[in-house]
Length: 109
Length: 114
Image (cartoon, rainbow over all chains, first blue to last red; front, top):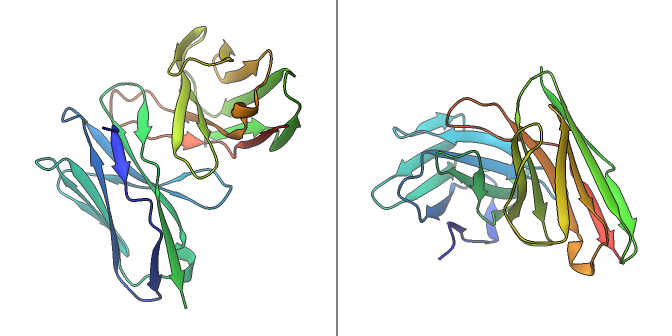
């Protein structure tokens, strides 16, 4: 089983839609969780950290479910500019982040 | 503010040629440094990371090597490139905060081995 798994998609949604991605992790000792956004042929950029209590940043909401070992990202009122690949990353309290393979989102007019 | 520089942006190399990619970080000291590779349509694979000068941890056996000759300089090398070395190489840094480290990436090098 992979350490961090994501549905590769693509998720094709119309503008204004709400879309959610999940990311599962295998190590129950995982400590830190993040969502990154990656545009085509660009470097990943930190979108948001994921906290145990859940957190929101504008149209984006991140949640952590430790019991089921997954994190989620919810995007409300999707914009064309949200089209990208979304990577989840997990830290096992070491010096390295393990990334999922990413979920591709395509928002259409 | 902290910045990370990675060069070159693109590189085309013949099979069997050497490789040297360089990455430097500014505006911080004693960072953790990383090299990742992303093959076409695939996820980020951690290749090497370093917690200090001269300290290199290798994650995947391969014909690549890494060195950290200075605190904020990280170099990825190969003596003889293989076709399978093609990919998008990303350098990254994180602060040492004892957990919850966030990674910040350089702009990447697209390497094509022909």
